[in-house]
Image 1: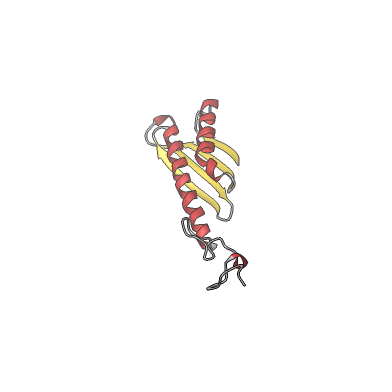
Image 2: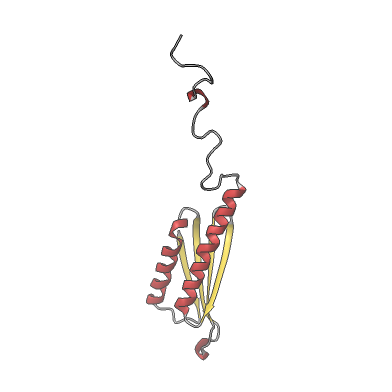
Length: 132
């Protein structure tokens, strides 16, 4: 998984970048095989005036689904990152389930019609084996 962090009007510090890296990697690690690139865009809309204006946008490239976008706004940038990652986790999981059903894969808990036996392994019906 490739991760790019971009910031606009945000006091971009190494601590914030490390926090963002940790949250995204930990939050999306179960989709590591499906997620190619994640771009994180951080923005402080009002700048020093404050308010609920810290914006986090995740652009996630998912194999088979294209690019998914998840956003969150909060007064604290770390909380905005947390919310965006949580939305991404749920959204990617939903998309992966949808793709699985779309491709005709059985849902979890359902067995295949053959119940795991090959046709030549089943005993003949009604007869006794090994007796002549």
